[in-house]
Image 1 (cartoon, helix red, strand yellow):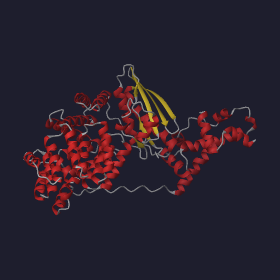
Image 2 (cartoon, rainbow, N blue to C red):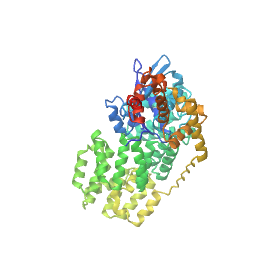
Image 3 (cartoon, rainbow, N blue to C red):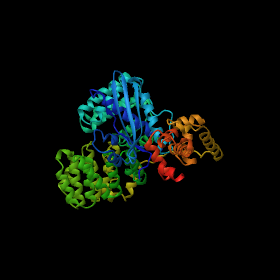
Image 4 (cartoon, rainbow, N blue to C red):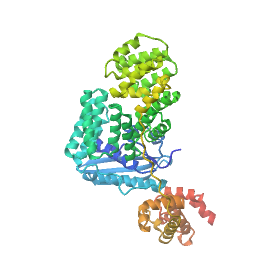
Length: 590
């Protein structure tokens, strides 16, 4: 069952005449996602999974089912002559109705304030409809005072998410322009770092040069805000994949989650690190959180499959890997883990066949050779594959050769040679060897006394900060007094007769903070705001409909007199509260 307090923000449509404002629409969508994700107790689907449905033909029911949410937000934006019109509506998928919609006409220069206003209203309406949430007075923080800088930032992201070298270079140009206009725009530096690291990993730029530019951008970002969630996530990735420093990677990952507890990419990364260490319960917790908020992200799926491989649940791993390969048969990490599973299951012929089916250029030469040497070792054979692999491993930077040579020696029982290879992990900072160290394929060596010594060196103890104690429940006497205050005010002043009444406006009238009023209604009275107010409206309607002086007024007219502004809502609420239709109720009272 999906929680009612769960939402996906679908990509806003660009209604501009020339269709040139798509990057602004994407930016609005992303800012609302980030803003709502800050609210504890509200499940918000991450960007990658939400944007999966950009220009998608799926029905709302299908989208909600795939994302595991009860609420969808649809919106659009139109920009003309320095002004922006934004429309948004909230849809209750189960009821197949939209329960709130709004239109804003604002100056483009006030975009940040508009995004904050929209996000707060969305949060308020979800709280009124589905239960208590603590909502801050501001949920969108302006990243820059320069609208031009922000536009370049959004254009950079727009190109970066196309994942190809041409667009990555365009992204870098826009990110660099954004920080040129505002040297304190940390998101611009992170965009530069992300783009260059992508170019380096994908082989679209000279590796060392691109990595250095990425590291330089991260250093500039760190000076601006060392606690930034995105920065610490990227520093964690850098620590692991370029420095093979597990402890630093874990510390950065945890700092990222401290800054942004709902950061799905950081949850993926921390789950991955716990999986390598063998802390599988912790790994499972983090990967399941990432899956709940970003279920359609291929990276989330791969990390989950890798987790199941490491814990030995091969059927679950194969199911996810097959899904990944059906959508992209060139997904090399998925191919390699699939081969690993075949080897672990003893299906060595199938493993060899899978390697043969993969184009030679997909593997590095030492990786292909390493896989074959490992399969030979598992098959009890000594072949030329191992001899060739040993020659490759003489090169200091032959990281794949080192990792497969370690696993091969481990399975041949040549433990001293395997441990000698492990020393290269520290000498050359090999993240590839770090991945291989605790892989299930090296199981024969993992019971050796020296393995534990290496384990302690690879995974030094990390002291986690103790969790903050939860605040105590409010004093019961004060709570009862506040509940009486609310009920007395509602009975005497009848604020529910105003169809535009909101939780915030009622909170102002009774002089109680909106978050406290929401908590009191849900936890002490047992109703969310809409249920509480509509119940009062129904009781008032009953009085009106039974008064002979009102016999000349229609039922819907009396409903409007009671504070309802929708015939459908009135009939639905009345049937739910009373158990019969308004007409049936009137007949029963005759």
